[in-house]
Picture 1 (tube, rainbow over the protein chains, first blue to last red):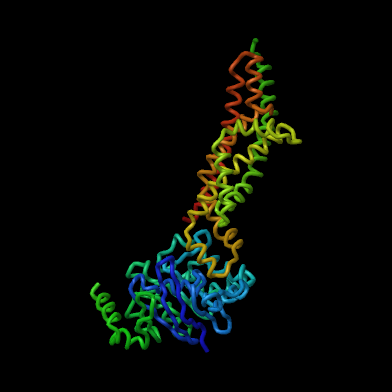
Picture 2 (cartoon, chains in turn orange, purple):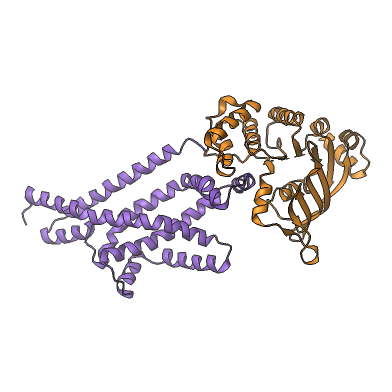
Length: 255
Length: 214
C-alpha cells in the first residue's frame, strides 16, 4: 500500500517550469532521499505534496485520500474540497530548512499547540506526549525554554518533535541540516536515523550524500524538474547510470 | 486679576474635572480605532482588488488631510444626531484607525512567511493562524510605533475644541483669557505630560513583558 502516490505532476511559476513530469510513490516504512542541484525542483516537489504550493497538472493521493486529480479542462489539476485537504494535512508532517518554530511559544507549547487546537487533544494529554517526544530528541530539559534560547540543532529537533506530535503517517524533511553549522548536523541526522529504525515513512531532501546512502531505502536524483535517476542508494550514489547524476556527484564531491 | 491660592486651586480642580472629557475622548477613540484599524489592515491586504483599492484610498484621505478639517467636516458637513463629544470620538476613531491600520499591516507583513507555512502544515485554520501565531508576534513588533500614536493621541485630543468640546486645552484657553495669566496653559501642559508619562510607562512595561523572545 502506498502512503503517497504522485503521478505526472507539473508545476510552473509563470514561464518558469519547475516540475516537468514527476511520478513516484512511497510505501509504508520506506525512507526516500531526494538529491539534486539547487533549482532542480526538489523543494518545490516537497511544497506541492504538502499543500504549500498547488500543482498545475497531475495526480496526488495519500493512500485513499485524493488531494488532486487531472480532471479539469485540458487535464488541469482539480483539488479536493477543503475538508479532504484538511484530513490530508493530518497525514503528513513537514520539517523546514529553517525550523519555523513559533518564537513566542515555549518549546512545550510549540509541540502541544497543534495537538490541542487542531487535533482536539486535552492539554495534559498533549503535554505528556510532548515530553515523550522531547525525550526522544534529547531535549527533555528544554521544555520551558524559548526557541531563541536554543542552538540551531536544538531548534530543529524541537521542530521534528512538533511535526511528530501530530502523529503523521509520513514525514517530509526539506534540507533539515542546510541552515546548521556543520558540527550540529550530526544531532539531526541521528534523530532521523532513529526514526528510520522505528520504520517511520520519510522523504528527505538533502545534500548529505553519505547520510542519504546510509539511511534511505531509495534515492531519487532530480535535475531540471525531472527525476533523472532513482533506485538503490548505493547504486545511484556510487555507480550512477546517468551522465547528469555522475556530473552532479563529481561536482558535489569536489566542493 | 490678582492670583490667589484659592484661584489656583480652583483652576486645578476645574482642570481635573475637565480632564475626564479628555480621558473619555482618549479611551473611546482607542476602544473603537484599535479593532477598526485591524479590520482596515485586512481590507488593505485583501486579495480582492476593489476592496484593497478602496481601503488604500480611504487611508490616503484620512492620513493625508488634517484631523482638524475632518473634525469640522464631521461636525458641520454631515448632520449626525450626536453630541459634540460623540462626533469628536467618531472623527478621532476613523482617523486613528487609519494610522493603526498601516501599523498593523507593517507588523503583519514583517512576520516571516515560514510562520504561516508552519501553521498551515500543522493544520491550523486561517483564523487560528492569525489569532494564535501571527497577531501575538505582531503586537510585540508594533509596540514602539503604537506608543508614538498613543502619545500623539493624548495631545491631539486638544483639537476637539475646534468643534466646541470643552476639554482641558479649551478650558486652559478660556481661563487664560479670564484670569489674564499663562498659568492655566502651563497647568494644562503638565496634565498632558502626566498622562503621557503613564502611557509611556505602560508601553515600556509591555515591551519588557514581551522581551522574553526575539
